[in-house]
Amino acid sequence: MIRTLIFLASLFFINICSAEESKPVTLNVIKTSITVDGKKSEVYDIVQDNGQEGYEGVKGQNFDVLLKNKTNVPVAIHWHGLILPNNQDGVAYITQLPIPPGKSQHYFFPLVQSGTYWMHSHYKLFEQQLMSAPLIINNPNDLYPNYKSITVMLQDFSFTSPDKIFANLKKSSKEKMASMHMDHDMNMSEPDLNDVDYDAFLANRHTLSKPEIIQVSARQKIRLRVINASAATNFWVNTGKLEGALIAVDGNNIKPIKNHKFQVAIAQRLDILLSIPNKKGTYPILAQVEGTKKQTGILLVTPDTKIVLPSKLATSDAPALNDDQERQIHPLNSVVTKPVTKTLHYTLEGNMSDYVWTINKEIWPHVTPLKISKGDQVEMVYTNNSGMSHPMHLHGHVFQVTRIDGKPITNGPLHDTILVMPHSSKTIVFNADNPGIWPMHCHVLYHMEAGMMTTTNYTNYPAPSFYTKMISPQK
Ligand SMILES: [Cu+2]
Image 1 (cartoon, rainbow, N blue to C red):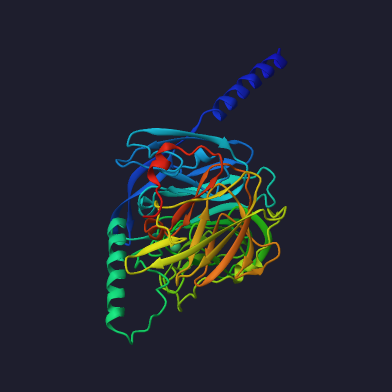
Image 2: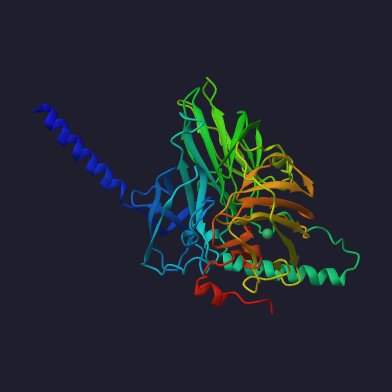
């Protein structure tokens, strides 16, 4: 009798679990407000019904998400860094039409990776208004179990609307060019590292005047998941007194690199292990904007500790990001498995008289996409002829860096986004194993808006009509 009851109870339990597993997670794109340094601002967010921001899943299970547009604007949300079927990629007018206000769209595909990813708007300039959230995929066989996971999402913020920011960029670029023509003595110096003057930098939607405070305990082991969700800002992550061990980049495990400062380019992610010492304290995790003193961050705090807020300004300017960290990163797995069968060249340039940014001198959507075939071992050579760095992102694939400035590197980093330094080149390699029309673009939101975008197309992949209607050869 008892056995029967246990049996029936277990059936009931299994039923509940499987019923829950088959139900999609709802992600609501919402309009909300945040207070930045005492001033209120309307922004967006992507939250579950229970209020949790973003998505957390498990490798081997399905990404089963009902995306609801609860805003009053059309939206498209891209799952950044995920290997997924092309029509699930969430890019407006390339892989799908925007979702109208009040409508929803179902996404369903297996999660074949694990690690730290993110989701963000891939339509208009809504990403600048914080239409983004973390996307974490746990690994049932994690190399680092029993670490407390803490996500730090970095964003740049302005009270000015992104449309106005973009208009200002175009205007000031024109004015700068005009003054250069008038004044021949003027030094034709490199453009600024940061061409947008932001009002604030956010870590989990807070500035350092009221940072997020996360309770930790002495001797606790922490896995920090840093996501650079900025529209146009590269950061140096500073773990302060705590020594960090960088163990994954863009979701890919690497041989650990111990340091206190780590570079994170726009759209990239870092997983950093930390160990809280066996004593009380406040442990700030800071992120400093390259080329400035400006910083943001969170506080890790042990119980009964008097909290001292770090300054919003560091004592000295952070340098520009460089390739030092890239040269140190060695992944645990490689994607370079066979000789290159196809090489594609992409030149990155800017025409500042009209604030236009180009790939192969083409301005999106007036492009003739380069083609690859399934089974190719593809090499892409990015040559940056401009004075700004460009975080280049290829959708739907993980690639490996094989050369920096033409010099081969052995077992280079795996990425979905790489920072191509000014007047520099990077070569990447990947297996063409995921047919589609794949967006490939600069992840500086305003560079993308100003034309620095194309697609890499698999031969024989049927392009959707909304895509073929939109792109047209260079005029
Ligand atoms: Cu760019």
